[in-house]
Image (cartoon, rainbow, N blue to C red; front, top):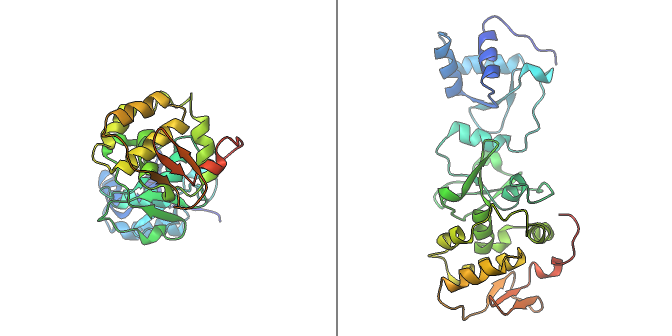
Length: 272
């Protein structure tokens, strides 16, 4: 579609391009209008920009994707996180954080884009309708100090990801991919991982979560970290399950974890 830029909207388009906007909201347009000394209804401006091919439709209400002139037409960016960005743009206090496979992807751990993106939500936060279908959610709380900011996205960092998986192993659905990047992370993730910070995250966690976290450290090749973590808490006496309670799997004597989830994929190599 050929785009036009009328005199009334050209200063707005120029301002959005200068500031690198990816998602535009009604409030953002109102701010730009004030900066430019323009009067009128920002919703009307949004309609004009969309009509002329400068704003693309999103499922998130009162938000649009900005389509800059550099794209040579009214083409979307193909950003798989665009609706996630829109939720944050509409409500900066929204508590959603990239989690599980999505976090592993933006942290350059997983090699495969997940079939369904994952967001972690606080217990009192509703799952946005705009994310239905392409996204799923988990209820696992990770404190702000273990949240990374990657390309404008809030995500669990490596410490938070490890604890999140230990808290809810079934929340990570690409099990083969998980096994692959855990085993491949022995050396390159050393600087990003801190067992003492993981210990603080687990200070009030159930014993089974601590056991699973220690087991994941072993898979990562961090035996010293696993032993350190176990020494910080009362001795692990009961068997913890990593996966469904079924026959088979692999029992680790150090952490007393019975792994029926990852075990079939460990040591196989290959891509995720």
